[in-house]
Amino acid sequence: MTSDRREMRRISVGALARVEGEGAMRIRVQGTTVEEVALDIYEPPRFFEALLRGRAYTEPPDITARICGICPVAYQTSAVQAIEAACGVEVGPSVQALRRLLYCGEWIQSHALHIYLLHAPDFLGYDSALELAKVVPDVVQRGLTLKKAGNDLMNVVGGRAVHPVNVRVGGFYRAPSAAELETLVEPLQRALEAAEETVRWVGGFTFPDFEHDHEYVALRHASDYPMEAGRMVSDQGLDIAPDAFEDHVEELHVEHSNALHAVLRERGTYMTGPLARYSLDFDRLSPRAQEAAREAGLGTTCRNPFKSIVVRAVETLYAVEEALSLIQRYRAPNPSAVEVEPRAGRGSGWSEAPRGLLYHRYTLAADGTIEEAVITPPTSQNQRAIEADLARFVEAHLDLDDQALTWQCEQAIRNYDPCISCATHFLDLDVERRP
Amino acid sequence: MTRVVVAGLGNDLRSDDGVGPAIALRVARSAGPGVTVLVNAGEPTDLIEMWRDADVAIVVDAMDAGLEPGTSRRVDAAALSGATLPSGASSHLLPLPNVIELARTLGAMPGRLLVFGVQGSVFGPGEGLSPAVERAVERVAAEILDEVGVALVS
Image (tube, rainbow over all chains, first blue to last red; front, side, top):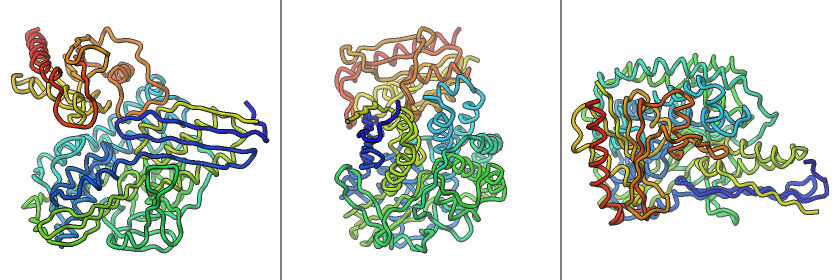
């Protein structure tokens, strides 16, 4: 189907609501000009912010974990750190290390799921992971093995694989014993091999020739690749602590979406997530992860969003290595949690969810009742970047027919691993052409 | 020794969708040692890992088949065939027939897989089961315990 340059092309992708929410994509092209790109996202955290008001300061880790079945640890970690900041409490290094270990489990789980079951089929021309599994079952099995190592880690440290129950303000309800963690070593060692093979596998995919110039924003830590700690930095000079987040980031209402769009007050659109972390923190990766990245054809920065699948694979390799290293150095925190006394105040916290920076802020009354909660998830921060990518991508690929264009646009959305993945996968395409 | 796994699927914060977990917990109270009982949100890779080494796996889930609320059905997965994924289906959560198809493709099916479905009536946000579905919990749990008993002696 070739396009008449004068005609109007309208590609709209309406979504089927799933448990995680709903999203829709609408692109209108007049001649060779992209007139409108709109990504409409249903964003659950808004309800949670209202729901948290009036609850006790101890409740957010369990309540906000329910926002997302894919990144509950990110919600729990950002929540407890924000509340601890409000109460003026610092947890010790042993609690911090255990948080990081749990976080590794979430990265492994989430990245393996996205790479193998959601994103790889796009690159290889399959409609689903099931079709992929029919052709290369061993490859899909490798993805499951990798993911299971993450699940096991979440089970042992978090108490269960989905929506962990062991996280509390101040630390953990129960610290796992060294012997319990030892059971994870063998599956993680197998996962290490699987992760290296994964980097090689996705590094061999063919990527559309496309680069963007969004401002990259990620956490940066004195010595570690960012997960649960660090300052927020950007490639244009931003360098702030959590309590300055709202001075620099503004959330805007837009007409076409229920979701708020986050922008930097100074410069507008920015991007968070694996590409930003990788590009800002390459020097914090392990030598082995750096080497795997180089062999897969990545430089020390990456600006092609389609290559995010390679970056996710590199981060998975890093997370497996980091988990093994944390287990080797493990000293069970004793007690497993620091006592946190409530006080009136305001505290901010953040962490690097698999899909990007997740910010929480709580204002507490003297007895610990939550007066205000603010949650800024990565998908809302990336929404503008996704729309900008789509507009530029469509403009450069107007020669594609509607089916091919829609396929690649969906793939472009999945580059960001947005929490609406469930919804955007179930798409009814409606193309309307006007003379 | 026969390895038996029972899994209740569903989300107990989505009203009748919680019937699978409710039945699994009821089974757990009466099942003897050697039977693993789990609750799963329906995440496909977890399910496959859970049942791949089992001799007998029993899965119980809410269903929406247009029947009277509380009605239950028992299906041997061997009888389910040809399930195909919707185009580009997500793998965060998959309908059970699709998970079974994926497991078959990967050669990761248990020796035998039984699926119990319970017709729900309310699937909106909320805790607790509707009355007709609540009444089905004890009955379906007893049927599952019978199956567990048969599996353990065979």
